[in-house]
Image 1 (tube, rainbow, N blue to C red):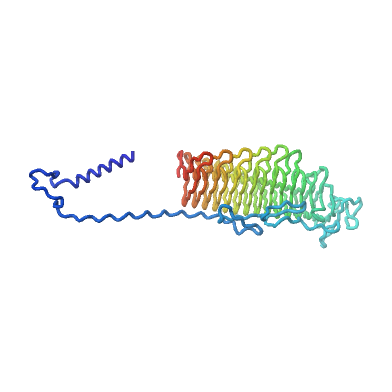
Image 2: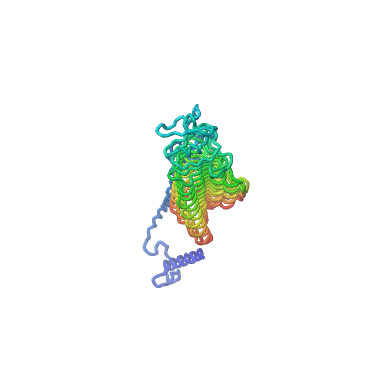
Length: 574
């Protein structure tokens, strides 16, 4: 229709021009009849007209203004001891690796490898030559306990007690209970502000061989200081629920405890430095957790490794509960024994508050980090969530970081790499994530069937704000934003090298916006993706972008079709 209308207008203009040029003053068309006189040359008709100058050649079009290049995440300077790592596909992108070139090391029973350190380090002091701790305070009353001593001792070094319980009964606030080398087969409950000092982690161990009246091998109900020993056995490890004052746990290994390695609840408070919780056993196939904080507990962790536990590595639950951690590793959490469920690295819910600095969660199962529920807040800087694996039997799952059900997350300098089905999920109303300097890369897809592998998945009304973010080498979709009331605002965003779904070679979109979602981009580059660089579809969907580059989109791997830079359909507005 439009082409036809232009053709008609053109013909009308030509006719009018011809008529205007050809008419005489009287309106008659000149002709060569007898009354016209002798025929004249055309040059004699009217005054002589000069030959017109040829028109100047058209000016070349002005080159289009190139959009401003997105700024890459500012991951450096790295935390002390972390190693700069250059991205294999973009030399300008540098992230920070918490481990040396050889990766994180497996350590001996009394050692751990903390983020930013070259290798394994001993927990607590070296074992002394004698049976007692090498350094015993001289300004406090000291009560001695030696394994196997007969009844009748008085707690002196010459006549030590044989049971820790006897020493506790004889102690006053401020006393020191010095433990010899050896295995203390008993449950210990401490309700006064004393210091319990082991000879060393490797050779002083509290581990009841059978369950008793307490829920843990070591129960703290006061501002107790526990140092340089090992805990485990048939009960939970250490229980601080509740305690009068803040307990302190320094240089301790909790190994092969039952149900929970460290539990803090009912308003309990604990400060922890140089702690290892590993290999917590299930009870009837359930639990096996590393650390549980609930009921308004206050927990501070520094240089802590929680590894090879079951069900959940770190659980932080309920309103008023707060956990603050620096230089923390949560690694290789396994599924529960009874139903092969869970295997989460860190799970916070119910209004709990979590603050992380220089924290690594790697090789956990199903979920690396889950933040869920109204009022639940995670604030994290220099966070690495990597290699989250699918469930051991069903081979499904593998979420790096999930924010659900009204949870609130703020990230600064975060790397989510080589996780399973989705690197970063933000879902449901009232849920919000703000991330500055973020890299989500190499999401693998589900082991069972090769599906998924999404970089960022936002849906269900969630709100996401990104500043300086790179999502690269993920699968199916680099960034997926779907459903009404879901909104993504991003400045300085790069989505590149999204691969097809492993199962069928389909898709590989850079950015997909659908179902009424709202997306606003400022300085964004979508490069070397597949099928479509940007796809917006369905009514109510709105994409607004300034300084946008969509380049080098590849065809779909499965059939060689598609390869669109920008695809808009179904009522979407761009």
